[in-house]
Length: 290
Ligand code: SF4
Image 1 (cartoon, rainbow, N blue to C red):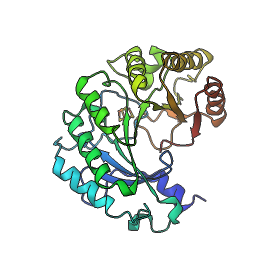
Image 2: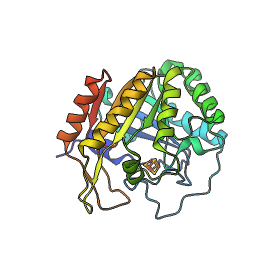
Image 3: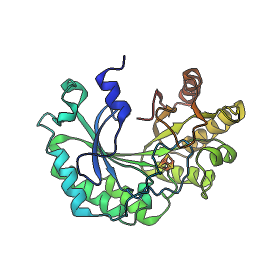
Image 4: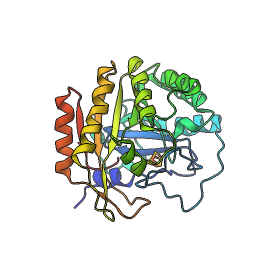
């Protein structure tokens, strides 16, 4: 039977009380409590991943980035963290203190956060809050599909976010353009994303998040060619001088928009992890998308 901790990690709701932007979650990949900041209540993304777990059946809300409101909501959640960095929200009452340490404030959400025109302003605001609450010692994290990292305004935001302790977690789900257009579906090419990651990595080490799935209806699976192409991309990024802090490998955990998507087996993820580590890049398998 799933423990309370596993249940909380699996739930991962992006809604909290009457808040619009900020929400607390227990995150396996963060290693504790993460305060998410959803910049896309409109659910807009420049990818159309069939595995996306954002329910777009109810339409998104009107997109208004209200900076004072973001500040207020993040501050409210930070105020629930005690002097030892433990989050005291009733939501986490059943957990031991060791499991509910605040680890980060993460820009993620129901779409691509870098699409938002106010992205740089939000990053500057979060950096300000990080300084104001330096005793809590949390990281700032940007979770992104990496498509817009070449835009000067996005770069300005990333720079602000990484002024203190911070990390970018960037998506890389494919090796070939063909598979990329099956699992991510975008007008931006996979080569452009690789270039963006190389540019980012020259100044800031980052993490990669890679999602693996199968299409049951098509009987298509990760084949040898796709795995080799994926590893080649990691090798090129590394050889260009970028430092990849970790590759996080995961598969389906919650209901996707396309019901024909199924999870891959753990041995496949483990075999890819071993190949990545042979390149000298740390890698870890996560059972879910948390
Ligand atoms: S990039 Fe993320 S939010 Fe956008 S469609 Fe893909 S999974 Fe959904």
